[in-house]
Image (tube, rainbow, N blue to C red; front, side, top):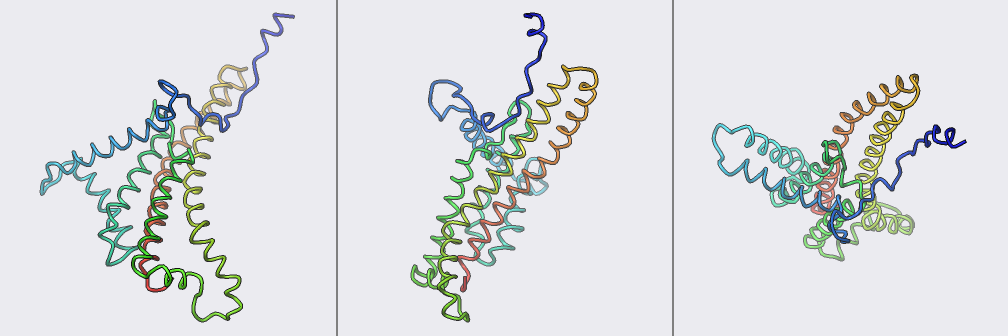
Length: 260
């Protein structure tokens, strides 16, 4: 009986939200958990890279200078200038910080030995969204005044007055609730789901590798999906950093516009 019990393998445990919770690396503080440490590391990494790329700028750029200027030029021209318009320059540092910070923390999810996208923890997307939220409301109130900003938001010209009873609450909810909620949840959801699938294919392949021959053959497909999905996840990670920054620029552009 004992021999039979010892021969039975435990069932496969599918990954879940518990795989995104980490104990403290040292001590009991939340500031020493893996996601928080990665965030601090990303700040050091980004700062070091762009300081190194701009420290000795040359007419004929080095590889690291070219890489830094390419990222900055992309955010400045393709997002800031094209979306915001003539007043874009003062918002470029903000957008550049958002883009590089999110991109770096997303890519951590496919870096060996790190393999965790910090944006899959909801607190980090929410924190960035709060800065975006405060920025575009501050810009709008400063340019238009609080009363005109709320008036333009809730009472669009040319509509029958009875429509304002429905549209005014919807517009308020959109600007003050739905926008920040969807901005944070989109980034969080994509990073969470992508990392969960990577864990599933990897652990599933490892589990089948130690099973019967037929299952060992299927493990090759699982590992293959894991490898292929890693490249796809890299694309998603870059795309989500771009989308978050683009939407931030669009919200700021809307705050600067004469009509909302």
